[in-house]
Every structure is written in C-alpha cells, then in structure tokens.
Image (cartoon, rainbow, N blue to C red):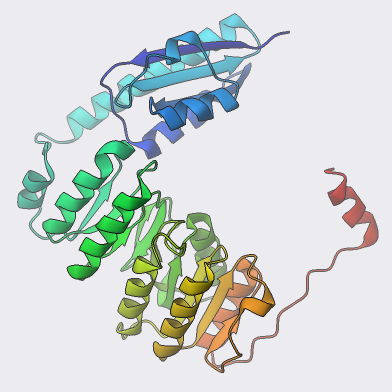
Length: 342
C-alpha cells in the first residue's frame, strides 16, 4: 500500500521547538502512523520534511513563522487521524499555556522587569530573528542559551564577541543541552551536582557524559554547551575558551571535561593551552581526533577516544586515581552481525 501524506499549515503560529518535538512523538504513537512532524516553515525545515517523506503541496507556501503539521501513514484514514490528533494536542497546549499565567510578557525587556532576579534567557525563535533577540538578551545582562538553528555563522561570531565583552555565556546557536548551577536546560537530564565541569560542542555528548558520571557516583558542577561550530575556524573557540576560563575560576569545579568533534588545528592549539592553563585535571574527548594531532602528553590532560572513557577518566581524576582505558572488544560472531546491520 502506498503511504499517504497529509499536511496542514497554520499561519503565524510560532511554537517552541521542544514542544513541537513532543507533539510529533505523541502523534507517531497512533496506529498506522509511520512518521509525523511539527516544524516551523523555514526553508531548512522544508528540506528535512521532504527527506523524511513528509512532502506535500500545502507545505510549499509556508513561511518561517508558519507552523507545519505533517503526517505519513499507511492509509488515508490513519493520516487524517494523525493530523487531527496533532491539531488537538496543539490546541490543548495553547489553552494550557494561556491559563497558566495571567500575564505573559511580549518582550525580553518586559520579562526582565517582571523577573528582576533572572540571569539567563533561553531563546528559540526562527533563525533569521535569533541574532536580534539574543543580542537584546545579552545587552540586558542575561546569559543566553540559543536553541535556534539556521543562524548564520557571522551572526554567531558577533553574538559570542558581545557575550565575551560582557562576561556572559552565549551557548549555541543550535544548543540543545546545558546544566547551570544544577538546573537542567532544554534536553538535559537531571543529575547530581558535583565537582566535574563540562564544556561541550555536542548536546548529546554532554547528556551522555553527565549521565555516565551520575551512574559512577559523581556529579556535575556546570555543563556548558557551546554549539557545534564553536571549535571550527569561523568561530575560533570563542565560547569554549570563555567557558573554560569560567570553570577554571569556579571553586566548585575540580575536574574539567571537553567534548567535541575534531577542532581545527589552530583552535585545538588554543583550547589545549587553555585547558593546561586552567590548573585543573581535564579529560578531553574530541571524537575522531587523530593521536598525531594531540599535544605532547601532559600530567594534567587525559585524552580519550569515547564518551564512556571521558566519564570514566573524569571520575578517576576526581578521585585521584589513575585512568586505565578499557578496550572495546566483541567476539567475531557478534562483530559479523553488527557489520551486517542485524
């Protein structure tokens, strides 16, 4: 049976990305539904929908501030039921949000006046508006977690320069995870507070290591997500270096962890120097970084190859114990099954 795709565009209906992902996951649980998505109508999101087999004529005219609900199912009835459920969940969420508070600020300035003790803004708006809102928050003296994606790299550079000049964190863009002062943000897990400070250019990496540390009986002082592009040539590690300086000065942080994909050679040199200068033992997991690109071994820096090893090394460093990596081994039969994708 040929799959059926149904889509609906709701104009000028911006919704938070986290809430939309939860909505889509609920719709995918319905019988007969193969795939579902709830996304804003940005050009990049339209490409994602098409690649996921959720393309439909209704989606074409959608604008970045329009909400797209799309469902693919094994039959027309299931597709229509999925779309109806998506609308129902959206309506319920909007009603709950309206009833939750009597007053909802419409600007960051008003929100800051309403909550004078607040020191962080979590921003999730279409990429074309993200720089303006993040810059506004930074000028108000707020740290920023920028969840938005599709933000130009030039805008990221400007925002991080502004943040550093004001001694603030500018996490992101496309930052999905952070743990600040024991408070989990976006997709972070709730883990114990402790003495390990993490700086990560990978949200899922930060989640994994923080959870493995918790399982090992250790906690996290702060987990700072910097966005996946921070250690590239365009951004030059601006926020990674700033975050490392902050953790180096934090008396509650005894051990550092750095997580990223391979940084550019120039950025790697600066970051490794900063880790050495921090004066605290550090576990470094730059996934895919060749051994030849690592600096001369240092008593203070421990390089590892996996996220699991990063957590193990951090726990050992925290306890003053030597770290001994455990090699990954698998028997031949299991390796053949894995290679065959079974």
